[in-house]
Image (cartoon, rainbow, N blue to C red; front, side, top):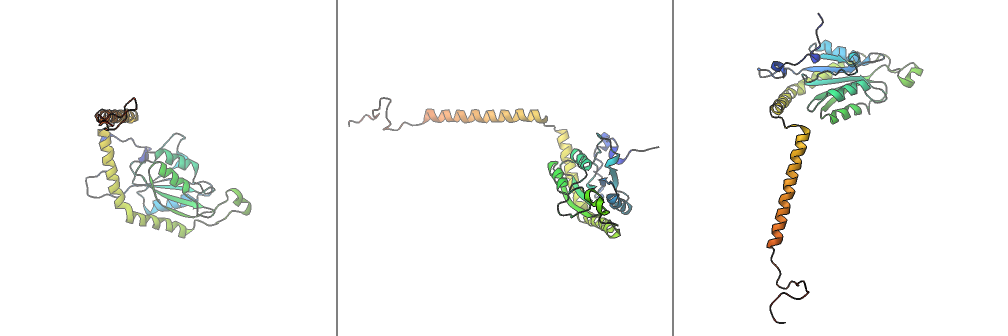
Length: 254
């Protein structure tokens, strides 16, 4: 019997928040969302991470339908893996990220590349910023590359990622988990409580909020106008202010 992957399972009301446990602590949950084309460079890093941490879930974007988007809400850590193509992540990986990430998500970039690594990952960071997620850090290493002009010279970075690169990815994740795992669990619990409160106290949606704001502005303007009118009617007239005829309003003889 074929079972659904964890990210595709429907969330029942009794299991609305799989991250909240009755115990004092829990381990963070991690998913790797990736695309590995051509030579499978990124897949080698993904496989090594899963071998070291079998609890990690993986989602190969290539297996998703065009309008199929995974539920990433159960995960504290979202690793986004891709080869780099002219300094950019795979476009389908970015499309899924743009659709699935949300405020408070914590993302790690996982990259293999042929050229220099200086400008890699900027597009992923841009998507994270737009979705109010956080790109916490990135790990990258060279990969065998025959993309574009490299195919005319037999490719570059043959034999990469090598074992040192692969071990480095695991060590990088282990250190991240040790440094931030507990903090991310605590922060997610706070977000889940906010979500639960907002669900129990709906604000009424965008249109209702706009109407409420418009009423507040109108009331404020009306109040300011009334105040200005009162100030005009009660303002004292200067003793030597000119009358409408240009003569002084004082009763003294000049």
